[in-house]
Amino acid sequence: DQVLRIVPESIQQVQHLQHLCSISPLDLWKPLMPEDIRAGEELHVRVPAPLLPEVKHSLDQHMISYRVLVPDVQELVDKSMPRERSNQRQGREGYNYTQYHSMKEIYQWMTEIQQNYSELVTKPLLGTTFENQPMYYLQISQPSNETKKIIWMDCGIHAREWISPAFCQWFVKEILQNYKSDPKISRFLQNLDLYVLPVLNIDGYIYSWETNRLWRKNRTPYQNGACYGTDLNRNFNASWGSIGVSSDCTSDVFCGPGPESEPETKAVAQFIRTKKSDIVCYLTIHSYGQLILTPYGSTTKPPSNNEELMQVGQKAAAALKGKYGTSYKVGPPSLILYNNSGSSRDWTHMIGIPLSYTFELRDNGTYGFLLPPSQIQPTCEETM
Amino acid sequence: RAMELPPGRVPAGRVAAVAAGFVRFQRGGPARALALRALRGARAQDIKDVGHKYYLDLELEDVLDKDSTVNCTAEVLYHLGNKNIAPDVQFTLGRELKSTEEADHMFYTRIRSLEKELMAENIPDSQGHVPPELEPLHLLAWVASGYVIWQNSTENTQLQLAQIKHVKQVKRSDEYLQFDYVVLLHEMVSQEMIPWEMTVLWHPRDGVQVTRESRQPRHTSG
Image (cartoon, rainbow over all chains, first blue to last red):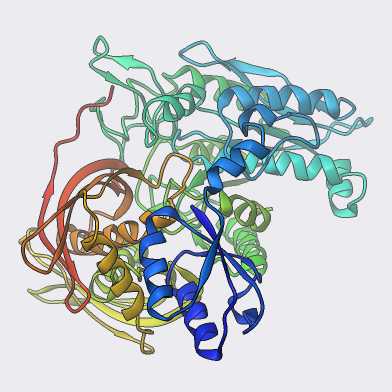
């Protein structure tokens, strides 16, 4: 890439330069906006390498003279900055929440968070995955004389849905950085405990980083390694194996050999069972689709508290839309998505947790699972 | 506002994806891909002995300029019986789309002047990034995938372009640009990632053509 210095000499030249900026990915350094280009004023623009010949040709054709200010931008960048990754510190200030993180980084982050906010946060062990990775969750609980009700949130049950663990990390950060200063959050924590599991399907998540970005399931081998993985969100004991699943282990919706067959499912289910009388709300975060899903996926028969579920869901969708205009639909998957059985949301509702929701975050399919990191912040802010 | 279709009908989002794909194909190019921003309304109608018809009220956005939205009304008819016939789609846009003539011309001249045939992989990459100079190839794939999605959709499937695994330019003796793609299509209902080959032709004057599209076997999970 090169940076060119141009001093337009006439209105026509200014217009041509503005035109060039609008039709190709040129990076205007000075001025910042094409509308501020003026005749007689110096302009600096970075031109990506593959576009150089045609841009220079276009300038020549319009008799616009230029000088090459920076002949090789990458060289300059390399000289002035240390390598990105090695600069990653995991402290309060150093962690980049607008970037996707590997499992190793997330483990480090959880340790740091617990240490930095130890007055509120513990990091209990839920269980282990098939590949023996520890499943930690963060318990955010303001010390109090009374037992408080619990809100449980898990992310990353499906490996490729990277925006989901990114949201869990963002959520924790927002709560902890603001609980002293924000009256809403502070009141929240006075009355409720938050349990957050940033990555449920750790083996799958690691696999999506190292081998197959679009992997979905966990990594349990079947048939002597002929195929791998159970869809953890078809593996819970809620009309297990009845609809929207496959008994073929190569399928992406393979429900496993039996309900709670997978160590990850078991770890979560066992824990929620013991705490169920205190859990008022269960949230599980997925992507994509921009949906707030209520029970059930396996039948169109509505849950007993359907009105309440829909009302709360609609309020959430409205609040979400208020931030950036993103529209979410609310309802049961059997009506607005597809039938499925064995989902965690259905199971938690069936055992008595009143408010159970699946969030399908951005987007609508344009980028799908490969959501650009530039969308992490707006997605997390609106969902917050 | 009644958004959801009565029980027994397919979710409206599924139909919207087909309509949006069709519109994207009809109106797209390396400088414009329209995506579904929101589904505002949907209505269903059974046509005896013919099929299921859906009337949709959509809001589309330009992928390159999210603030630029356009209203679209569409009708989608899934034919009864033969699953190999693509649904009929008709649509009307609420306004004229601005011309992409200049950007198209620039892309065309750039590619024609390349000495080596262009080749690229994994667009977007794992982190969701697309290098700016490959953005037109990305848009072309989106547009072409609209055709593939339209041609291969049934009421029981919902296809989206997940990623370009591989794209290779093929130089031609005529004036068309040709790109051979291997893409991954995400099928929502089965959650499968399906490899799909497509041969895409384009010329600024003519719009996008998909001259060949072929579903590939998945290699078993491993």
